[in-house]
Image 1 (cartoon, rainbow, N blue to C red):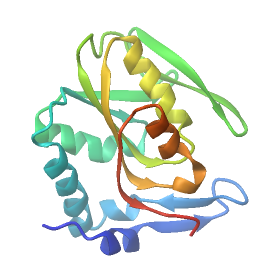
Image 2 (image 1 turned 90 degrees about the horizontal axis):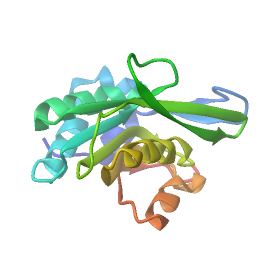
Image 3 (image 1 turned 45 degrees about the vertical axis):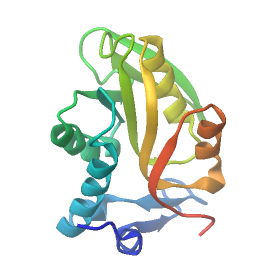
Image 4 (image 1 turned 180 degrees about the horizontal axis):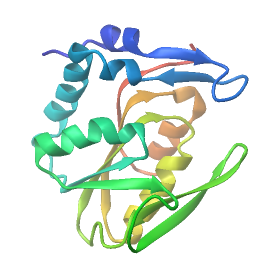
Length: 180
């Protein structure tokens, strides 16, 4: 199935003033209830990465899990969960990052990757990049190389994708919402 940017963007809903006033939240959950849309999104990533040298797929809590799990299954790659602090069992390493209203912390399990592993880092969207940079630090601390950051949506006006590129991290998104 060919990827149709217009179709996928038509499924993404904008929820105004959520989670707080002044925020226009881009909701990807309608993609999951639309079999054609879900197939289109998953197939686009499969075609992009099927011949890639990635060894692992890492995904960020929680919407990033949904597509990344299917992608890991289809590409037969290990899946690494990057979760909010306190959500993973066993020994973990953590990384704090700034939010506009405070700070948060992400974790991965110790030894989830090793020196020389090549990781695709997946999230639902790229905004300011804070969460992605924290995940990159966690993966890099264990010796992994980030092949690319992938997302369904890029919000380029918020600067995250440019900051990633400026840090020599390739970025791929299926669609973007520029100041819309």
